[in-house]
Image 1 (spheres, rainbow, N blue to C red):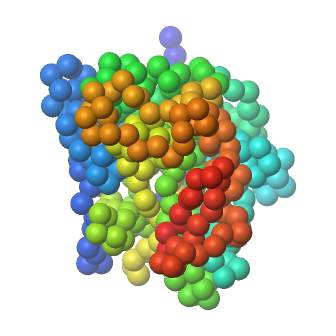
Image 2: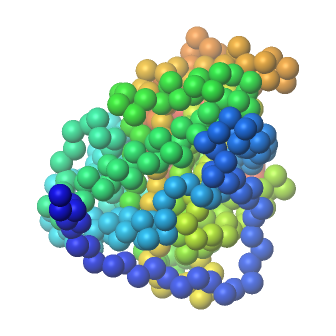
Amino acid sequence: MPAPTIPPVAHYEPAPETKEEIEYATVPIVDFSKVHTPEGRAELAPQVRDAMSTCGFMCVVNHGLTQAQNDRMIDIADVPFSQVPEAEQLKFESKTKEDGNYKGYKPRQYWHIENGVRDQIHRYGVVRPGFEQEHPAAVQPLVPEMHAFMEHNQFNVLYPILRLLARGLELPEETLVEQHRFDGEGMTFLCCAKYFPRSAEDEAKTKNVWMKGHTDSSTISLLWNQPVVALQIMGPDGKWRYVKYMPNSIIVNAGSALEMLSGGYYKAAIHRVFQPPPDQHGYTRLSLFYFAYADDDVRLVPFGESPVLQRVGITRKYADEDAPTMRAWRSLRAMAYGDSATEKNENGDEEQVLNGVVLKYYN
């Protein structure tokens, strides 16, 4: 039988790695070569528990894809931007602010950053295969590979993480997996994102912030590490530090939905996108994300049956009877993000109130 034909794709040349002296954040590294046996999960569970209950960040290595497969996906991720004419892109523009849906294109200059400056981030979202989605002509031949990549993220990365998180709460391993069905109603999606350089004037107006400090609305966010150093995380000491590039690794962060489900035990990671170091100025930053959400009908109520939460206590954003569903929470966050109607508190951070919950944007 002949091998299936792989569609040719133009190669995206990433920026060279930075040589600048940088104080990097300390991000725990979790080796997924150990995740496939009960003994390995028993060893990894405390590492994941500690990482996600302190800063909400960790780095996964040995996740099952080779560097060559990773490179192929980055080449594919550039196609929606470099191979699709602007007029055709308009036909697939998302309606995020209208309905909270991430499907299709988010154009550049969609979000307000500061002082009238808008973002330079171009995104293309591919929802899970269970959803019907039309794609631009150049993207259509690549959809099978995109879906296969999504399956790898779901079954080989996300599900093991969810099992380890459940163990950290002393719950049955499948507790969180059962709330994240691959064929369920929800908005888990693959995101191709291309960050473009900005003018010196815009950098000055925003104090070099490309995307405001925030927490994700997801349960778990997976960022496939790439060489342009721009992601920063806020440490326990309140300082921002860059995340170091590690080839063929995945940066994992907890989102606000996981924080609510875990009663505040797992911390939603505070992060932002900042101007890269000087020797990477002028380069585009092409990234692949997998944003995981629980099924739409899951209510974001803490696992009160968790022995861990019974010992340490539960922190709630809502009374249990008022807790939103996953659909309501992610739609509300999606429609409100990038809105200029925020107020600054005494620390200079911006705040929004959504359904009685105060959201902060850290600058």
